[in-house]
Image: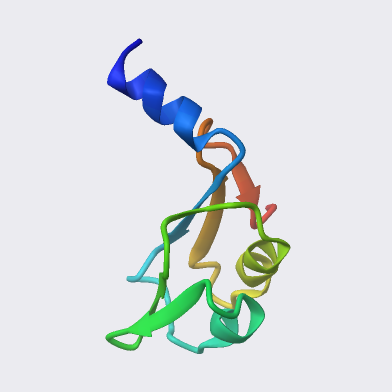
Amino acid sequence: MSQEQDQVQGDAGKWRIEVDRLVCAGTGLCLGTAHGRMRLDGGRARPVEDVITPDDAVTDAAETCPMEAITVRDAATGEVLAPLR
């Protein structure tokens, strides 16, 4: 099995949080919505962990981000889970 296949299997059932820090306005709404999953770093949001177990609060944060700077993906497939456009 290749290293890439091992990574996909290890990420099965997990989510990846991505933040476009050039788009993020640093409002902090995501910190309140997904408490403990997001933090501010240099005035911009950043996930505490890039790959997480599923957490509806994270998809809520992506859906409510006023700048649409947060994307939640299936860590194994890359499918966008939030925000739904």
